[in-house]
Image (cartoon, rainbow, N blue to C red; front, top):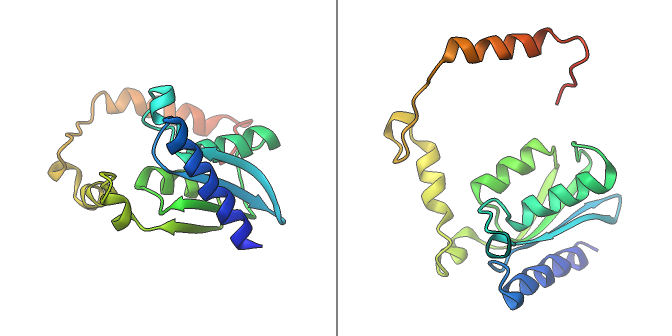
Length: 155
C-alpha cells in the first residue's frame, strides 16, 4: 500500500514539472489508509517561495479536516523534505515521512537544500542572513498577554 501512496506523490511531482507550476515535488498525507491531503510544488505558479508540495499537502489536509494537527498521519513526498517542509511536518505533528529521491539528488537540479541545513546549524550571528532582536520587551508583553488568555488553544 505504501508504494501506491508514493506513486501518487511522484505523479503529483510530475504534474508540477509538466505544467511548469514548480519543481518536481509532490506529496500526499495519509491517515488510516486514506489520502487526506495532496499537494505539488506551486512556487512558480503562485510566486510564493513557501508553496512546496509538502506545505500545500499539509494545508490541504488541515483545511479538509478543519484541524491543525495531523497526528496519526504519514506523509509521502517525491523528494526528501527541505528544512522548511520538515519544520512544517513537525508543526503538523505528522508521525512519519516516506520520501523518494534524496536531497543530494535534488541538488543536481539546483535545489541545494544542504545549503539551508548548513546555515541552520550555525549560530544566528554566523548565518548569511542577519538576525537582530528589536523591541523585545514590547513583543514580550504580547506573549505574556497570550499566555494569560484562559481561552487560548494550545498547539
